[in-house]
Each structure stands twice: as structure tokens, then as C-alpha cells.
Amino acid sequence: MSDEFDVIVIGGGPAGENVAGRAVRGGLTAALVEERLAGGECSYWACVPSKALLRPVELAAEVSRVPGLTLGPIDVGKVLGRRDEAVSFYDDAGQVGWVDGLPATFVRGSGRLDGPRTVRVATPDGGERVLTARHAVVVATGSTAAVPPVPGLRNASPWTSHEVTAATAVPERLVVIGGGVVACEMAQAMHGLGARRTTVLVRGDRLLTRMEPFAGELLAESFADAGIDVRPDTSPVRVDRPVPGGPVTVHLPDGPPIEADEILVATGRRPATTAIGLESVGLRPGESIEVDDSMRATAVGDGWLYAVGDANGRALLTHMGKYQARICGDVIVARAKGERDDLPALRDLADGYGAPQVVFTDPQVCSVGRTEAAAREAGFTVRTVEYDMASVTGAYLLGDGYRGRAKAVVDEERRVLLGVTFVGPGVAELLHAATVAVTAEVPLERLWHAVPSFPTVSEVWLRLLEAYGL
Image 1 (cartoon, rainbow, N blue to C red):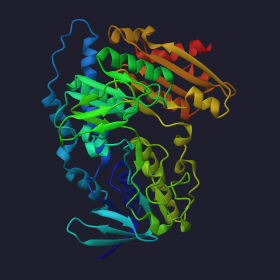
Image 2 (image 1 turned 90 degrees about the vertical axis):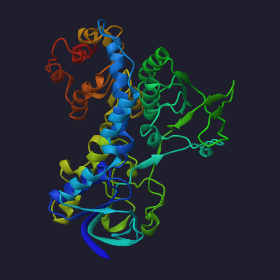
Image 3 (image 1 turned 60 degrees about the vertical axis):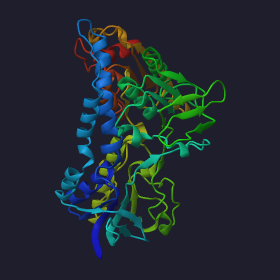
Image 4 (image 1 turned 180 degrees about the vertical axis):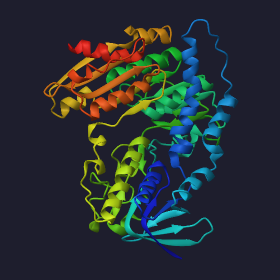
């Protein structure tokens, strides 16, 4: 069975869906190939379920800071039930219906390249469907969890982000390997929901090493207050789980081993490009696909292959994958119609400034642009200003014991922001203003006239600018 489309997208997550949507909006036909669930990792095993698990823990922390409110125990069963509702009970009928309504063709099965513009799909019934593209094939296969080569770890059936977000019960004892976003979010979520002995093993010297140092420090303080045991500069040397589903023992370089009910590995991601036929077009399986600013693969001739989202390795964030997908879809449409494809709106700009990111812990951590270290390494003339967010009236009104900090990284030559970081309860809603200021390169003198409302936490903007000297 042979089918021909203008655009074929391998991978039905948010990035793939957005490519198909933009292509169809531009008048092209599109097929979307997905082996598992339409909506991808983000909708069912990452962003959506993790935030559904974190929200009750965050809200409980907020309530505990406000006198006059009584905090009762979290009903874990109801939390897991709401998580199931958030992921549509792992049923993608609604997502498939959205694809059909574009209209695009949803193809269920495992897709792999078979030379230029050809995708072979192994269908669930054991058959095969051969798709050919008139203009473009887009790889949007995302990424999978990386498991470090610790002796015994793989045989211990560790949880990854996939399993922890889909958990049907909360383990009493949990060991987390990693100190990044997934490790921090899920350690706090599981601990808040009942994992009373939670240990986080961090290879580096602090949590969230890609962010400003104070971000990891403030989060570590919160973890310590909650009873989460964070062990920096510690990596397991061996893992034992003699009985499947039984206790797991984590052996450390120093000190006694840790026994737990589950072990969560959150040590990074790798592109899901191993089994999609990259070798048939001269690329190496298992590696990121290098692309230009239009998301076109640079190592494939004739310009028909594109990659968006985690598959190209630029920014492993759902919103950035969707952003790249919109660029990619618009570029493909323009090229298919013989129109100009070099307009700014069709090119990747945001990646170069530094993607916005939120860590949905308590306190929340969010940032956009470059850290101070990254800005200095890039050769900018840098000046930084910081402010204790607890000193803002709006922060005090949110509750007792509010802890937070803000930092702005300034390009002194142009007097624009290179990066902004906020840490504190509820600060995620401050991030988009920072993203606009950084990506639009708003001059500080102009930003001074963007007056924050009183009494909101947004007044931290005024305090940062005053600290700078405006």
C-alpha cells in the first residue's frame, strides 16, 4: 500500500503535531506517524502528568505558609485519579481526532526512513504501509531517558520519568539518581505524596547545575526542610535487586548502602533516533540530527529532511520543540510554494537567546537567556544585579517565610538583559515578562517605564532596576 503526501512527520508528540498543523494551514497535505499515543511523551508521561502530581504538593506548601488555614493530609488516591484524568486515562482518541480535524492523516505504527522521502510504517496488525513525501519528511521522535552504566542498575528495573509519572502507588522509600529538573521535580512530588524516605544522589556539587548557583542552593534548603536527603558529589557504584519488584539496594562509594522500594533514574535524555532508519540517508542512528535555523538537516542533500524538538538536540523543552515546529512547518510551506523562506518569522531566533524554563518545585525556579557564567564565557561585558524577593511586599503577602531571589544579567555595552532568573513560590508567572525583555532586547531605560502593579511580586522588576542604578 503506497500513500503520497506533501509532508510526512515521524513522531506524534507536540512538536510533530505542530509541524503537521502549520503544513496543513499552509495548504499542504500531511501524514503524522506515531507508534504509541498521539500527543507523545509530554502529554502522557512527562510535562502534563508531572505537573498534575506536583500541584497538590505545591498548594500544600502555600497553605502551610498562611496563618489561619488548616492543612489536612493529601488524598493520594484523588491526586493519582486527577493525574489519570489529565492524561485522558492514556487514551489518545481526542488527540487523534484533533489531527483528523486539521485535516491530516494519522498513521498508527512504527515509522522508519527508507531512503529519500520514503517512510515505511510497521502497523499494529503486522502489516506495512509505505509513505512517500513530495516535499519533506520531518523527524519529531523526541527523546528517551538515559540510564548510566552502573553495574546492576538496568537489571533492577529502575523507574525513569515514564514510570514515575505513571505510578499507581507512591513508594515509602525512594532513591533518585540525578540533580536536574526531572530529579528535583519528581523527588519533591513523590516525597510530598508519601515517600517518607527520599534520597537524592547528585553527581555534581549542587542541584540544577545549569542554572545560577543560588537556584540549586535555595531548592536544597527547601528539600532539607522537607526531610529530603540530598547527597552532592555522590554516584552509586552498584545496584542490587535480587527479587523483581522487591527492595532495591544502592551501594555508594562511601558509607552504608541505601535500601529503597524504588529507584528513579533522572540523569538526562538521549535522542530517540536509534531505530528510525537514519542510516538509509547517511546519518548515524542514535545521535541528534544537526539542523540549520530552518530545522533542515544539514548533512542530507536536496533539503527534504528536517528535525524538530528533542531529535535535533537544540533545546530539550516541549515549548521550544513546538516553537521549532512552527518555524519548520512555515519554512516547508514557503519552499513548497517557491516563496521566500528567509523572513525573520520563518527562522529560529529564540534558541539563540536562551530558552525559557520552569522547574515546578517549591520554590519554583525559572530562567530565560544566559546565566552569568554563560554570558561571560560568550564574551559579553557583564554586570549583574540581585534582589531578595522576600523584601517585596507582594511576596510577604503570599505567606510567612517566603524565600526567593532574583538575578538579572546585563550586557553593559548595549544595556539590555542577557538573562533573568527567579526563585521563589509562584514565580513561574513572572517568566514571560523576562522572556519578552530578553528576546526583544528591551533597553533598560525603556524597561524602567514598564510599571509593575502594587502589591504584586512583579515589583521585583522595579527593585532590580533600582539596584542597577536606574
